[in-house]
Image: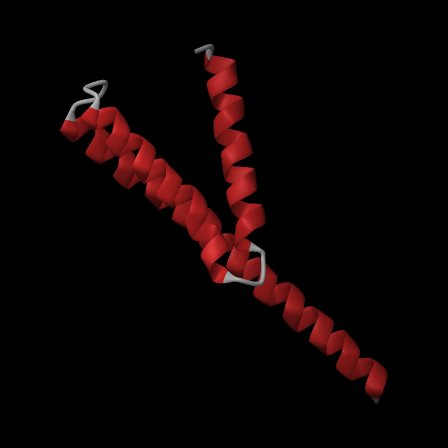
Length: 92
């Protein structure tokens, strides 16, 4: 696969992970990491990746995906707080 296409796929995946993390349900943010782990497990089972390599990729990949999840949840909380403050200031 072309390097630019791989980079684009990674950027789109992180953007979609951030989008899912900002949804009301916290469980949407676990969708992409679960798919990622399942795909890496599949690659190990069919012999395309060695176990150690896949383990390292999964640890690093899930760490980055979870960071996007935490960032999305934090931004959602900040937006809700700002909206609540705006509503309170209009009530006064």
